[in-house]
Image (tube, rainbow, N blue to C red):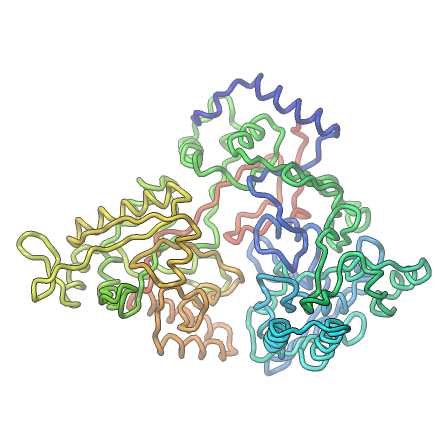
Length: 623
């Protein structure tokens, strides 16, 4: 039984009653609890899962995922076609789609939102999602260069923006061909394009709301009837949420547009209230889903900086869904669920869900020929990397160190996460072969058990770098040290650093072995395999192999889907049976809580995208 749950229920009831009195409002139909803040409701600026969960409630993109298997379903786009060469995509939009203020959703909304995603002024993390579009990368680079060399003078900033707009219209392959027809022109085929288009940063936004237009009533009526693209934008002095900086040349957005009363969305919910670090309330839009009785009318997201308090709130019935559970109590909860011991709280036990996620925990090898100290790097040899991988007992780590019983991983792509793709098997646990691999690299254990080369030079002490942010990292690092010392006879020194210093060391290549974690961004193996391209910005390992680069390029050019998936599986097999640039440990497991007898429509897919509009209330169990 979880020890922290022994806090008296009377005390808990008092605490929650005080919270309700403070809010002065009725309980929402669906209450979520999160220990992470919502940072932004601007989809182009999103990068966190919690923010994107809100985006999928407030906005709707061209397409959406089926949360069961992550196949693609229509959303604002009712249908689409692609040319024989895979370079031209045409989308037919729903002519009945409307924004929450009644204005029509048009192709121009997508064009403007995606231009906004591309401009460096927006400071978006996911501009690269559009780099396969003709001229998109070039526009971003051109404007970045222009802003870096900008010289202030009267009218220069507006002139630069006008030239940016002209270049976008002339050279970027994103075009509105009529109000409900959108065309994309690509540089090369992207087999997973539709998956990208379901991602939150590519959702549309309503330009008059984002820029805070001030218009007379007749002009507003025309914009809401025919679309904002049919009227002339107001002067900058009548745009309350954006201005052009005459000193830097940049667009200076005011992000207050994404607040209650000013945010205009096209999703199933609208933003009612948002109190930063406290709570956020959504209200179902009156049109579109009236007949669906199980759909929540009101959704409340509550912020709990203390995860134990969130767990207590769930126990009391004040919270319906914990989107994440503190690492401090995950092990106890999973033990309780595994044993089925629920005492007088069967709801608690049936509500614990451990979901293997779309991500992998691993340890990176520095693959560069030399270390930053100038000394030779033993891990530049793939045989040494294979030896350390073979000497690792991952099952022991997930059973006895993390205690979460995560699925062990021998490659990067999580199984059953991508339709049509079966990850290959990588290296397993084989200490005898590990010793042979070291011998093939010229390292042998002497009579004293010390690892040395033929000249008697000891294998260098291995520094294992991890972050101080979680006890989990320290425990796994310590287990690896013990396993490698026993199986290989190496000396391993643990080095812990805060996240900032750790990140700086990774980028500089100043490590031998370092912990890592990667969540996939899109539903294709390349979201993991591109990490091993020699030129990839996230290739912290410094891994370079011309054959892998060529194989990735060949797979990108392949149009037949099954053949392409087989090519990617061969690449992943080569990476993790031969090259071993990093050591996969386990698939990441997320622990959430909801009562399956009270809620349905909750996803268990590894990608963990939850459409709040899909949740259904099965019965009223609220206190």
